[in-house]
Image (tube, rainbow, N blue to C red; front, side, top):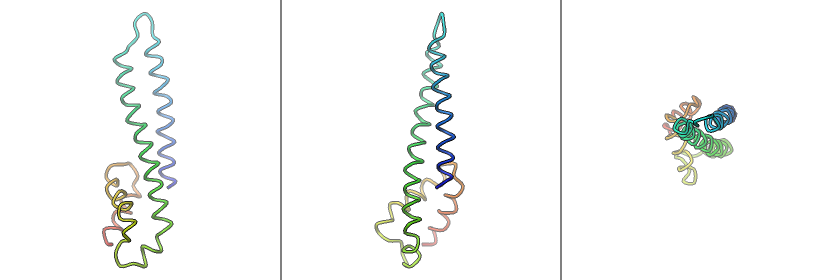
Length: 110
């Protein structure tokens, strides 16, 4: 969970810098660099979506953490957690959080 927070904070700081860069590009005289600003804005939107995804994954991890005893005690994965666990397994290869790889390995055995 703290790894998500660190990654989210890092991306948020980069987003603030990108917003400043976009503002500078649009404020340039005599001719604003709109195309460069548009490309940076697209990047900014992707980063914002990534930060939101990190927040969702952080909540999913917290839910699994709170119910880890229940998961361990059952032979199969509880029905109400299958969606949450599937999300974590799916995201393991798609985000830069190495701990998700370990989570994926552990749940493959379940």
